[in-house]
Length: 62
Image (cartoon, rainbow, N blue to C red; front, side, top):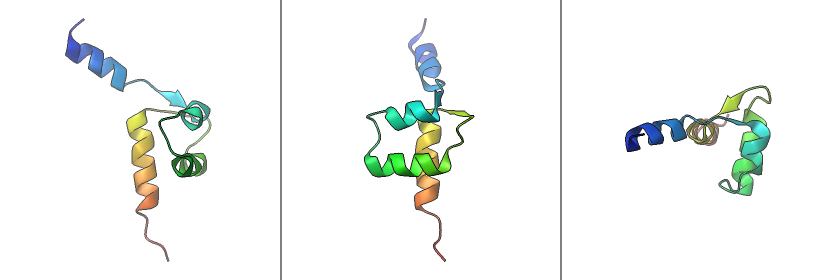
């Protein structure tokens, strides 16, 4: 398997909401955001989870 193939396969891994919340990769405050914004029935890649955190933290407050 080529390096690029391995990297693509690794980046496509999906995780459940509970798996992402248990990951040591995220801080406590990031986990709080993920708990609020992620759907329990879907799976997400780490990139998607980071994107969700970013979107939430940059929302305009009214």
